[in-house]
Length: 327
Ligand SMILES: C[S@@+](CC[C@H](N)C(=O)[O-])C[C@H]1O[C@@H](n2cnc3c(N)ncnc32)[C@H](O)[C@@H]1O
Image 1 (tube, rainbow, N blue to C red):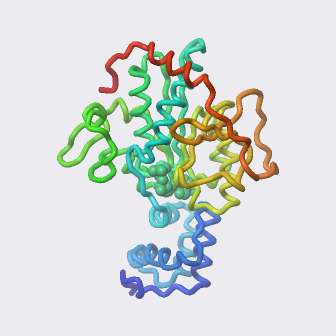
Image 2 (cartoon, rainbow, N blue to C red):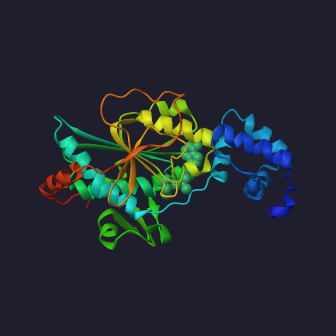
Image 3 (cartoon, protein in one colour):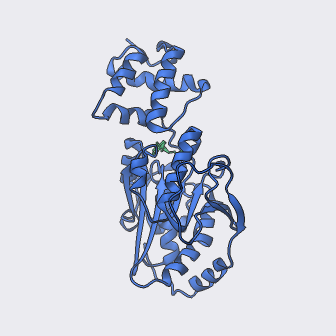
């Protein structure tokens, strides 16, 4: 029987490559050779539960499970789900204080219901999309006349379940300012639960970012956040995914990546905009075609300063009469 100790499970390099390549092919997540112990440790307990003795046997077990149940379980094990509310504040300030005013001003010029579509790709336990929802409520004051859709997805069912529960405690809340904690959370014992009006703004679903068919069904996004997700992918998968994001954005839409990530060598399709708080990618406005699959994937377009439209938008925002909302 396999024990839970690291050294109780034998995994040959050949077996590591077998399971590693399978994970890469299905999910896009790439484990270099120096991650062999990490993979082994994460598999050991699950194999013990299943009473499977060799990694080769586990590989066949997961590969031929057509229900995908074991694959989903494997994703729970091998994904890194670290996240927190208001993670990387400068980027979020760029979103709320610079991008949002531009979007609001653009939408205010439109007739009919104003729709705002945001995508949190690789949302983990939900802190990122809920943070965006809170920021939107803070900015709009009221959702009256607005149709705000935040879609959030992940490959791990386990984290999605926690995101839907929307109950948080401890270190993940460390960057939530006390007034926001009061307005948007309900204390539940030691924990805090997201209030229903914030919760209903976010729709969680299981999406594999390495599945171009699933990605191609998402479109018209005003903003995409995909932060700290692509670092786990091979370059080939990154290129395919960034093409998918480009096509999912509406012209003029914005794309946030993790602050330690880059599109260098991955895509040149986006314009890089220098906002005061952070650099953000943008799909250029105007008539667009889908980014062809064979377009060269070199550096991004020449960086541009944020337009003075941001200034005008902020002035316009300041004129919106604040009302109590989401509180
Ligand atoms: C480190 S977390 C980042 C969470 C959040 N975006 C943030 O920056 O705080 C990365 C998330 O990406 C998810 N992920 C990894 N590969 C994925 C894939 N192929 N499809 C969808 N989600 C994936 C993981 O399950 C994990 O929850």
